[in-house]
Amino acid sequence: MTSFTPTPAFIVYDNRSGSTLLSALLNRYRGVSVSQECDFVFRILEHPLRVEDEPSARVLLEALQSSSRVHELGLDWNRVLDRARGTRQWSKRGLIMAIAREYFESRDAAASVQVIKSPRLHYHLGTLSRWWPEAMFVHIVRDGRAVFASKSRSVSSGGHVMDDNLVHAAATWTRKLALARVAEPQLVTIRYEDLVGDPEAALRPVLDRFALPESERTLVKAQDEWAREIVPTHQHIHTNVAKKPRPELADAWKETLHADDVVLYEMLAGSWLERMGYGRLYADPGTATRARARLRQCYYVGRLTLDRARHVLRLASHPNRLVSEFRRKLRDAHSR
Image (cartoon, rainbow, N blue to C red; front, top):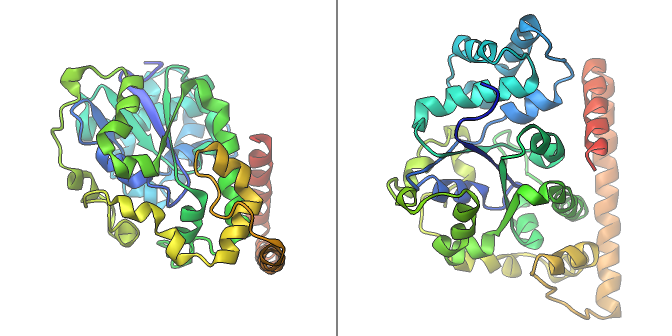
């Protein structure tokens, strides 16, 4: 019991990029089972504790259960521990395998491909690809301008706007695209725009990379079956998941973003937009427009500086959180 029995796969994504729609569409196939969004992968990887024996594994599993997203999985943690014990190798890799096995056994144990949907995987692709060289990483990408437009209007389950700072959003989008290249031999990239335009054609290369036989490509589950399992606290974020994909939504950002914001985004992330096949809306915006965009950049950078200063002050009042944040930043920097 040193590896996944079915082919393991992970969905790699930025928020508001269509990963939930991708999950619901992939889950329809007979040979595929996709997890609900879960935090256990990155929480295990980013926890400072080293897992070397059963006591340390117990401590980490108990820490995991403090996360609402992990608790919502409804797992039998004694069974998880038994599975980890069966690997005869106490490690974080073993814990991830044990949790995944326990989760998928209760859903669709017969699926040939078991897909884990987890945030923050960009920062751990090097580790995951080393641990599972047979794994596949399904990387969904959406036009960065559309991602920012969606994030700036979306409220998280915690009650906060996801990201309404264009400079930060553009930096996050480009950085995650760069980080994804670490796993390129095992990476298959799918664009959100292609997915909503023709789902079956967009998913075909993914199924091919899964080596899924034709007999297991039959659609046996409804799209809304996966959507109905989304926890209530996150349903307001995913209102379109159970509906037929709407291609017109791909270009909705052109109507909602201010022209100066579009120009600024293209100034900051234009090379990556072109590399991903999106291009620029304003090839030559003119001197006056560029000047206005630079002024908006100063505004966003000023806001970002103030937000970070406030964050540091809040952390300073909680030394343990400050240390944890510092360690996380070091790990993120190391993953670049």
